[in-house]
Length: 128
Image (cartoon, rainbow, N blue to C red; front, side):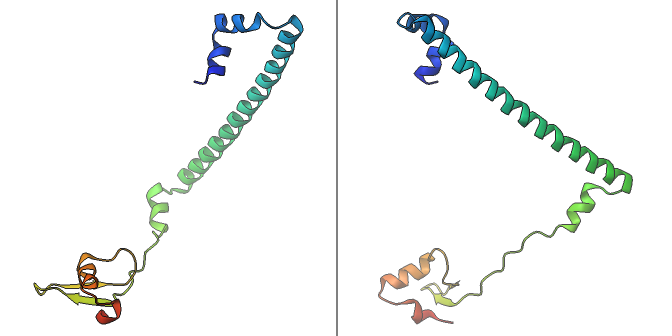
């Protein structure tokens, strides 16, 4: 909570700060705060109305689905999950243990390749 908010929400602190203000200044502050309050309330009412409308639409869709004998599983079976295409390996290295490692050349460089690069070799030395 900021100091300003603490000041506004604590009556005694607010009273202390208002001692230095004239009645006109306090009335102006009250008018400004009232205007801000009304704007905030209007925004909140608008959000509630939008959410209510959204909920009503969802309920109408649910009822339509029930009337048509369609379940959520039926809808989900129609939706295809995006499939990531696997990139074919472009490089291959065999380590001293005889293990074969392949790499597409994309993403993080595998440790087996990094070890070979440290020996002075390049990616082109391992082209498949």
